[in-house]
Amino acid sequence: MEKIWLKSYPKGVPEFIPESKFHSLRDMLDSAFTEHADKPCYDNMGSRLSFRKVDQLSAQFGAYLQKKVGMVKGERIAIMLPNLMQYPVAMYGALRAGLVVVNVNPLYTARELKHQLRDSGATTILILENFAHVLQEVIADTSIKTVICSRVGDMLQFPRSAVTNFVVKYIRKRVPAFSLPGAISFRSALREGAGENLEHIEIGLADLAFLQYTGGTTGLSKGAMLSHRNLVANVEQAIAWTAETLDRDEDEELIAIAALPLYHSFALQSNCFCIMVQGGLNVLITDPRDMAGFVAEMAKYRFSYFTGVNTLFVSLLNTPGFDKCDFSGLRLSIGGGMAVQEAVARKWKKITGTVIVQGYGLTETSPTAVVHLVDSERFDGSIGLPVSSTSIQICDDDGKPLAIGELGEICIKGPQVMEGYWNNPEETAKVMMPGGWLRTGDIGRMDKGGFIYIEDRKKDMILVSGFNVFPNEIESVAVELDGVVEAAAVGVPDEKSGEIVKLFVVKNKPELTAAEIIAHCRKNLTGYKIPKEVIFRNELPKTNVGKILRRELRDEAIARG
Image (tube, rainbow, N blue to C red; front, top):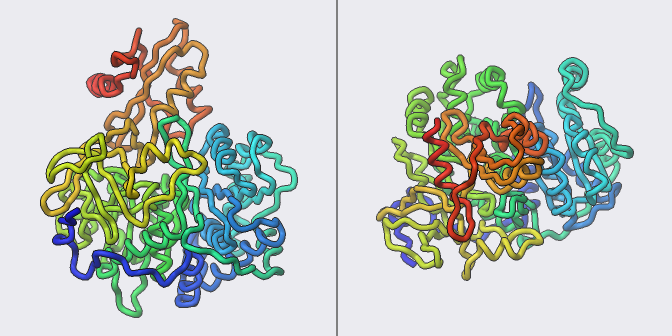
């Protein structure tokens, strides 16, 4: 196929990334620890860890998992933490021990957590004690044998650590009561690991590194199998694309604001790996919903790199004091996860002086596949060009390539494309085509310069604040409630979150209320998946084979306002 996008490539970006000198993420991490040992690596809540300290602590955690827990290469460990310094320490330690990391959203309900733990077969979990009561509900139905509990302040310097833990538990009362007999504290695990040596495990590029869960047509999330090859390649692809922009003087720090959750594939690749490999400092924002606190933290740094989703940009732009932050060092603002609105991009440039560079990818592509030119002077709505070693085709329903400018499904091929879905060959077969091509489910077009534009979604996926919400999951929960006969979930545009969920319901109990349905959903779904409105109908529109016409319902919901 002709790679017409190459003629639009930025200067210095290669068609292919060279063969990596690293044989695994572990090798990549070890190199960074050695090269940048004395530089700051992570900041959080007024405390800091250097590369040397992260090296030491992650080795202790990895040694604990190997020698005290008895975990062996390929076993799965679930990590259920927000943006705290415990996350990179534990994640790096697990990878260095040859384990497979299962990232878990800390806001999962018991139902969602049970599915992910059972599906992944994780035998160990590291969880923030704030969410341990959820684990207590389901642990008996999972393969979990070892529970490691952490507290918010565990990686902070004393006395801040003790004060933070006291305030979180006793003043703000954010730690519901729980009982997990045999659980060990994160600090105890580090202490026990300090007396052991981290055993060097043979890890190759073909070995699995992550089971990164994403939604699916069955209503249950699927584990995308991301290998060391996938992540090493994607990190090197991203660095090749941004190297010239982020190039700096010897005494200039590369500082990234990390507000997106590290357990999400976007921040995982961008912050935990790309920034770290380049010797940069990640400033972790634990609670980005506290916008005043978020802006106050940003104001302390002359940061150079910022990643976000449209809703985050909107919130920051509308928070008092944001325009007073120091943007003199900001070189790159990247938007992903959902479409960035043009009005938001214009206001961001006016205040910060930088254009929001759109990127595109999926969990299944580790995640970066397409990025706009980092030296763009204006926002044009395009998601950009395929990154090095990546090919894009716009295909029809049969997987045949379409002509330039025609609308079709965006299909991706490259070293960052996942190995498949964990224990799910049926779902894998639905998205993987011959030759290693991945069907994305997104409808788009490519112009004559190779720039790609997303026009629509083939799937009925809803995007709420950058998170995938799949209608089938919401519908399957709704119909579990007595009185609900049928349900159909659709996404409608929303200024704050990009889209919100509206639920159409056919009921057979006249007394059933919308409030009862929403309350039922709240018990079983993460907050961003909960319908904002329930609309009752006598019947749902369907095709002649019985498939619900969600598009028709979406149009109706938009018309209702």
